Image (cartoon, rainbow, N blue to C red):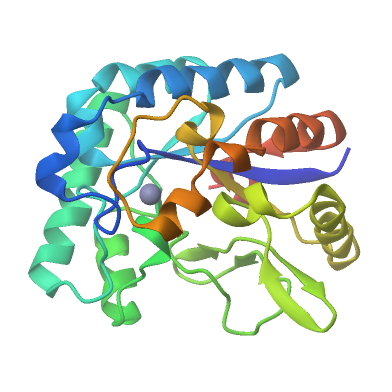
Length: 261
Ligand SMILES: [Zn+2]
């Protein structure tokens, strides 16, 4: 069976600065625990493994979520501490975010956290400093960048810190990400299957990324712009159906297991 990578960004659908002001977050109904449990039971059915990128602040609020994920044998990795853009943060803030998320998650898991993913693929502009900081805090891989530098099908780039990218499909000469979030929800299944078949010939795994809120059509109402109302409409929530059909066809494992760190 072909082996691919599955990742989950553990968050609610209002924890984005562009979607809702941070001070408003407590006003919304948090569903992240129950939605994550839905994903866990789906994966259990297929004996599939995954990496769960957990926001540090969320792990402080819901430490039980880390336990539920670990009890099923999945990997816990860091989705930063505050879940805000890291693109232009000053280096001391960047370091504090990496350190705090690592501390809280390793205190809950009792082991080292090896993987990092910035919010919304907002890798810091100064990538060299960022990778150096990740190394300092014991990370082995990073999944904060949307595209690899070669523009090819490489999902995993080996360096001092491994880099793991989402997967893209070539359509009419144009390359677009297909393997997670809005792309996975909106693209029809034949295009997703086409993406998988392109990776098959390249010998690289596909890296999927999903969010717990995509598994629950009953979302709390948010006062957001029309664009997000449309892009995040529950009418687009096809992730569970699509993931279910992929789990039937392929083996999925965590990043840690795939790269063997
Ligand atoms: Zn996120």
